[in-house]
Length: 225
Image (cartoon, rainbow, N blue to C red):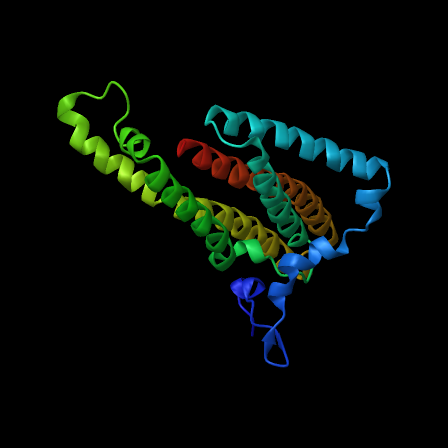
């Protein structure tokens, strides 16, 4: 008998190969080529979104004296996470972003790259960043410890924030859906209305969490310069 958390189980296999994880990239393959090649209302909306995001990230990176072309890395990251978040809202599709396996795989290499680049290329700047300007002399040792811990937990907070938000919404939708067969028609109508509203909320959360992950990654990148 399946439990509440069985919706997050990635172990469905075909010929001994886990297939649920293929949903991570299959969403990009399902996008019709007309979105990219043929001008349409959908392609114009997508281009507008990506251009706005690119402009914002370019501004953040330029403040850190970085190559503005690096913003394409983070806009691509945003699009990938957004696609996976939205796919997870459809029935019977595995939500890969609800697992730390994926979110840590995205966050940890990015953070390690930023740290290695900063400490090798801008060592003095990284030491300066450990002690904020205007810190009293007596508090400097404590600020170094606090800033060091803050830097070390960054990949964990990036990964856990995205995972926790995805899990919370899916669990709530599952709990409401499991109560449907036991309700009368009146309560069932209320339940369906609540699920529709919750699904709209989850769609907003999917966009917001993708944006937060990409923007925080951009900010961490700009801090090492």
